[in-house]
Image (cartoon, rainbow, N blue to C red):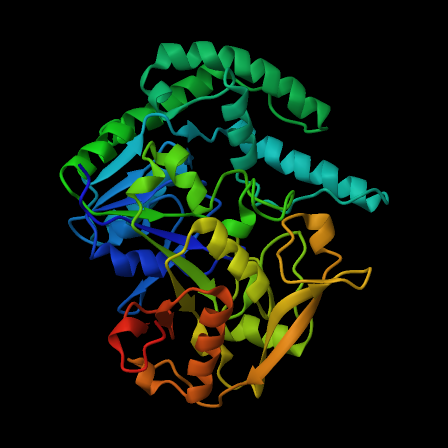
Length: 447
């Protein structure tokens, strides 16, 4: 019987909230850190004693010694990217031994033709918009994530990590898949060198062989860990508003990146989760296409971008910036079953005379709603209704407790907690692990 403590960490906006930092922080309180969705399109940045680590596939817990990290079956894995990350981390003195990193044999493999298909489709969709048709370009990272998940659903066209270990099986599968992919890419107008199933099978079997000692049945491994009363920490990639079912469709990612993705992405029932920490920036950002009601295209948005260094970990592209949408955060906290919040990058808001929240939407017909609209076309029509609160002048990046924060910053946190209906457990005032306030341990607790 499971008697340990399991925690889920999930983003409540459109990603880039700072989940990696909180996973790294909470890893010390857990034994096993589990990634359950997404692929190398995700980017988690962790700063420890001034050293910056950028992770894409490896769980952020890999930076904590003596912790087991698991890449679950719900993740799509680019083997070359994974090996590159392992080598990069080990070059910085962090050893990743077999047994410390487990990769699901059921995780699906991102192949080169997935990336070409991803890029080609975005080009075709963007071209349609240039001709005056509806813009259906998603603004993906072109890392092949969507096409890999599509193959997973197609079933017969999919390659899984376990398949890489048997070159004969891999070759037979690729003989069929490459012929189909070749015709699809040509139909999309891509001029590609003919796909060579023999060369691909040899290359990816070699990559699989290098990862052989990490590849295993992670479902049994996780259930075994629970049976030993190990404490599990689930690390989501992307964020709830990008969830394929519950985000701003169709401008979403290709997996269930809310906590609802944990059971299918790991093979564990949702009942094992005792605590869910929702991660929310003190403001709003979004990358790529899609509606963003609180986006600020003026000086305030630019100021937030520069102060928050809002450029993608994976792509380097500037993020769209704006004010905090409390309607969206409350929706995500509801969907994910959050038991507490971590408010990140609070320090970025220092120096503003006043700050704004969105607390409802006004629709074109004049009606007002305080319910989120998880449909891109409807959300694009929503006009934010603002609530304005005083800002604070002092920099807060050296604060170590809630008592060190200006009263306006505490009032800002209180308003978030009250509107969302969820206590604030953590406030982050800088990128470093040390720049973190555990609110429940402070006299001015927000819980």
